[in-house]
Amino acid sequence: MRAALIAMVILLLPVALLASPTMGIYFTYVPGVMYYSPAPVTPFDAYVFGHNIQCYLDASEFQVSYPPGVIQAGFDLPAGALNLGDPGSGISIAYWPPMDGWNPGYNLLCTIHLVTLLPCGAGGIVDAHLAVIPHHETGLIQGSCWPENELFPFAGLTSIICPSEIATQTKTWGSIKSLF
Image (cartoon, rainbow, N blue to C red; front, side, top):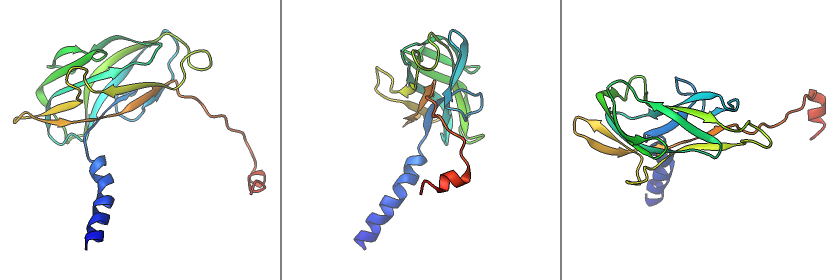
């Protein structure tokens, strides 16, 4: 009986971890793309989204870690939001009206305007990590649910600027079979 209970806990652990709220940086207005290869000295936007919130979100707190060669040129918040700080040095944002965490399943928390100073590739930026990290003063990535103002943690995600490319070669099916 004890072994069955332990096995059940081990099997359900990944489900519990995947069900927790996450906060990530995406490069499309609808979450989906977590990598981007911008041209040097060309402004582009990064969108901070919260996923799987399961309440009416009325506040969030986080910080964004920028890689060398990438600078923040400003940021925008949803209409009705108030903030203390900025994403690069730690930001606390209050949203009014609270955002619906169930429909469509994600919320735009902040839009960050970025610029790369170097080109992507050799001699420039390669596999640069843009990460949501804990706020430097509280040590937390957190949100608040309206109306009780109950705090909950977010899991911070990492995006990649200038991902390294893997070269591929065109081969016939016969040459692939001959490898084995």
